[in-house]
Image (cartoon, rainbow, N blue to C red):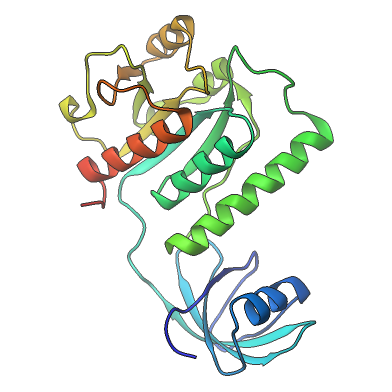
Length: 246
């Protein structure tokens, strides 16, 4: 089969010449959904900064066996390192924010509990949600050609997120629709930590807390954006200004 070569994330060591066996779920997706066959090529990645060309040797409903042919070093990761502190959003909005952040080259995602959060995640519910977000990030990384899957940390209170930020994390930005400062007026940076509020936005007190922690308040223009739009819009603008978009 010619055309698009599927990318598959594997959470294990990969090396040229290796034979790997993938389990039923992967075999079903590649064989039934993507209609791959023995002899077809795949691209594998595991977060080590490389991509691996592989060939399917055997595929049935229960398993898939492939051989790793070559390690590749494509240049797809931005020189701009961005940590996203994303206010927790409900349901699909958080999934969308995570997926688009991964597509746009973010290096790390820290969910933040803000004042309006109800039913804080903990215990088994937290582990289940983190696993779900991880799968969202993996799917986005596979689609976007990323060489890493950005880690998604357990949610922290916004104050704790701010306390964990160090000078090594670079320029701190907090999105504030009332700010007169736009991204284009800032001095270029190679590392950025960006705070995006939840559905209802950050309170004045939370924005003040971020500013007291050294973050600059910035806006994206005259229109009010939803939380699942604001993050991707800001990331795209930053990557265009200082990264690898455009």
